[in-house]
Image 1 (cartoon, rainbow, N blue to C red):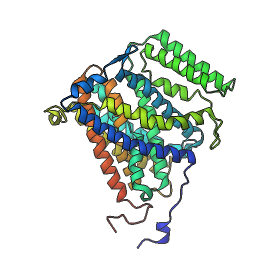
Image 2: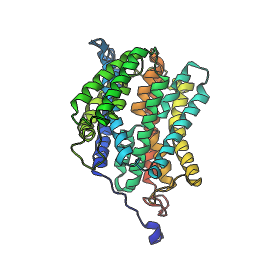
Image 3: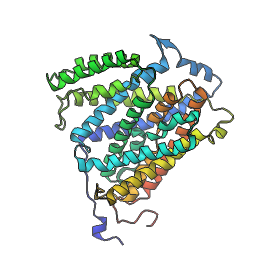
Image 4: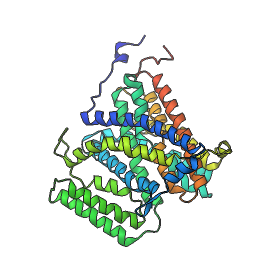
Length: 401
């Protein structure tokens, strides 16, 4: 029988902002599952060609699919940037001792999958897919945690959000560095000039009206689109130019107000549209054979094995070296479970697949199938692993009990 000390639970309080974010993300996960299933179904019915053509309809110089991936996803990245800003200024990442554990977890969860993919694809055209298994889908990871409810400690939710946000930030850097082509220095300089102007409006002039920042963000998006840098990066840059207040529930903070406003449109409009447009994958007769290709194996091994191995191993080494420590109510089983949930790539992995193999539709589709399969298996494995894990270290697991 566990002793009282062993069953003691250290409570971590979740802020109101974090709880709203958590609720929004877990609801979004259910919608994304439905949209993905619907898109796969429609694509592979007799009228699938018409459904695919829907995303290729030209509108104002770009097709519908590009408007979703280049414009609406910039709004998604804006929300990611605002969430990261909140974590850095007043959240889990605001103190170095708290930020180190999710930071090293994110690094391990990025480097290990990339190395595994590279080992299987070095020197081949599929090497460009090295960034695909790096990403973690926050919505699905939190959706799995939400299904577990009180079975997992609150600090695990905070840890998963923190390392997933850092993970996404690193994925954004990868997009900027490795998946940008045909750079135009004039347009890039213009975009940077707009960003510096917005930062000056915030830091020097303290303009608190939101509209000038949003208008500047639209201009910055257009200039980045023309520069060859992926235009979605404008969302992250804009997030860090908008004034932020570290006061909890400060309704006057433009950053706070915009983040609150964007949660539902991103969760229930933008990401579902992204799923509908980007999981329209024709399932050919030989799709299972394609899973044995170096690229597909690299993606699946990276997400299913590289993520939990990288997250758990580097966290263990960092704690053993005294660089950081585990929260009192977390054990190594929790960290391993978080690593498994980190293998849910979905949104970011699919997004990077489009960039890595632009113009090579068969390779893109094969990559997306590998991402969907690996993400599903990672989510199921993470859910049942954490379900069998005691809420506090020292308690017997449900399997042991």
